[in-house]
Length: 127
Picture 1 (spheres, rainbow, N blue to C red):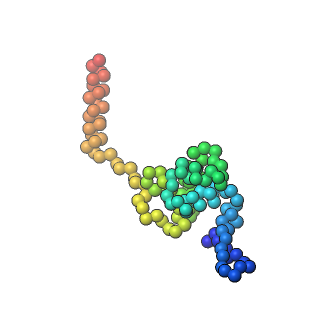
Picture 2 (spheres, rainbow, N blue to C red):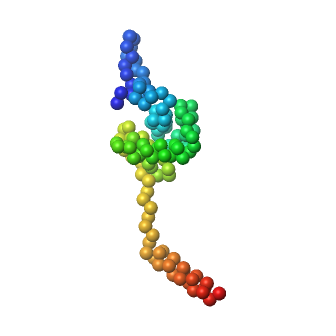
């Protein structure tokens, strides 16, 4: 992906990173993706703390919005996992569980709540 290049002029093959050429120095792209690549799944707060030497974030909401942008990017660069964690997609989709879909309310629970509200409304009318 062009993130490392061979260094010339050495007897032994050496490689240097070239990520700054792709994303620019002190870029939020570079900082956030480095942390996700090196440390695995992270929350927005963890990304913010662990990138503070590489870039500055205005507030925690900016980090969250930025990570959501990586998720919705075409093609996506990150995926949202359970418990507010984000994972890079450099090596493909993560194998862990993804964010669970909210369970629909069960009919019995909904009927019980409707009956309870009706009973409370009746009590209020009689007061």
